[in-house]
Length: 438
Picture 1: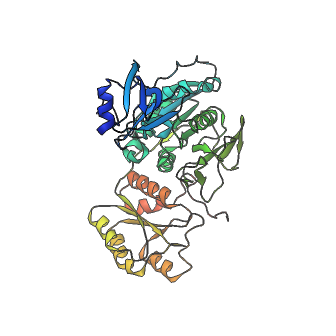
Picture 2: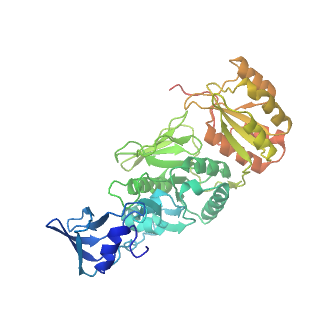
Picture 3: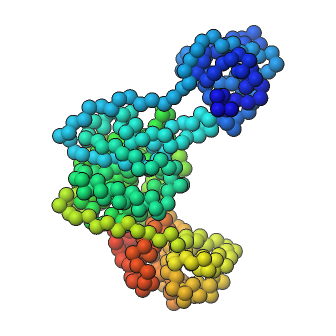
């Protein structure tokens, strides 16, 4: 029940009998012991045998209830809510940084109804709970959406790109995008293609733990992102996240070269087939790449935000059925990224269906399942045969970036030949001629 979130069965009956509400101070008598604390919500997926109170020392205590348990309401309380402190005073002489919130863990808090996290905080909330930002930049906080990142689509990429372009037109010094980590790499790649010839940095930032948890990395990541947006010498799309599990550094990964490699570690993001773009240690941003686009506010942004959703990413595995490729073709898909084995291989049983797809003007690109290295389809007969069929080798582009690039390419042109040429052009450092050995 909404008045007693997470409570049911015997626990709910006892609370109703005591006329207690969430936030009230209650006394629980059980087996000659007495416990006092504030009644707090529980996860809706928990059992009916426990209640949870917050003790005066700040710890939460779960108490099992049985036929002998008694509950007394000894004080009226307020239902727990999230509130943010007031915004710190702005220093308008500092660089002007726009924080755009799209949702995700960095803009979430613990939901006691489910025990998980949900989108709750706006960009303004983030600013108010990290007052250190007021010493770095004059912040303009905005909320574009409130989505967990698995719900982000190419339509959101389009909206983000248009919104960021508008902030650049309004003379922002830099833009920070708060985003969920699970698909942040996809969005970073999408914005890298959509926002070409950038004059200023666009920094995506997330956190592995929500901002209201003591172990949260949200504040440190956000401070690092704002410092880069305000002062970094580069003008590219990058992801800002912890460089290690501790709080000693923030690493900036180029938007088309970064993948989330761990489910929960603070340093989950790694640059793939490339060193990171830059690193923040203390107050110093150190460039790790010699070749980067330099900040230049006189440069004119080229906005190309359209994407085509009719692109599939297919992971090959032993025994894979090539009919899945036919399904995509029959359902109007215009592009397929293959995630092949090793140097870029799929079973010879797939050759005929791939040949038919390419004859139907479907763009087919090959990437590797390996994290490091590059596709080379000239080494083995399988690769050479795939090249003859018309499968395009995508070098050291990894599958997620290749998927986003093909979606972007097919959003720019419907001509298969022009699309093939654009797919193999190095638009924004998404691949290299030679891959560094790891």
